Length: 310
Ligand SMILES: [Mg+2]
Image (cartoon, rainbow, N blue to C red):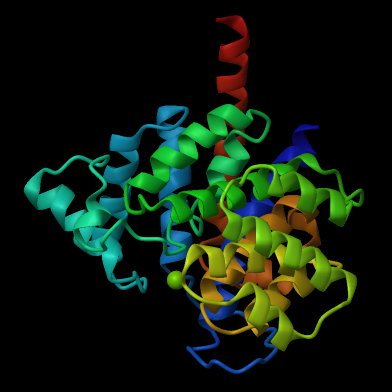
């Protein structure tokens, strides 16, 4: 049990970094193209995923203030990771102006808040940590999203991604039932836009649609509704880890983030030993990511033991 679970946690974090680095290697080209060699660096998606994992380990669960501090510190150490326009401005508000993490600071930058995929792209460690506690998972995802993304669609996108990761961890390889997986993740979203996209994903899977149709119906943009269902689709449309991330990145658009999210889900299902060795060896900071995955697994066990005894 222990070995299999750690393999899945490690597959998820390494899968995020590999999908991200593969997408980053496309260097913004928008056409449909398959690439198979990862770039030397991951981007903000993985840097922030690391921040989420570090914070969950340190606090043995979600703590919004500490997680926001971790984001700020990690950003200051590596500001060159390719962060979008919003988060660094929010980090400045927290750092210099002493603003609170839960004020919905993104609303000062975007009317109604941001519905970008920035909350979903980093959420995988929460899906791992609370993989068998859907209520706690929901609470933690909502809080973690709100630090930078308070729009309902951004939060729902993060919930969808976190649940997909949680379900992938709980699904023993090779027992994946694709239809069942879609039905289950659809159960966590309420907005019409996500429900429609997940229905579309099911239809596209059935008729083995070509990439142009997939992009047209699911999207490949930076908005959460135009990228989270796409990442889930890439996982379900593939037969192994490599195919899932190559496919996700081949769709272009916000390729590093769609690659990172598909990589997180696929890694959580297939486990680290089914990730191609050349990618594991060439992935930036792979040792640290492996160590983080093991510590996250240990922290999640300690917490669930604590819950049972209290
Ligand atoms: Mg990025």
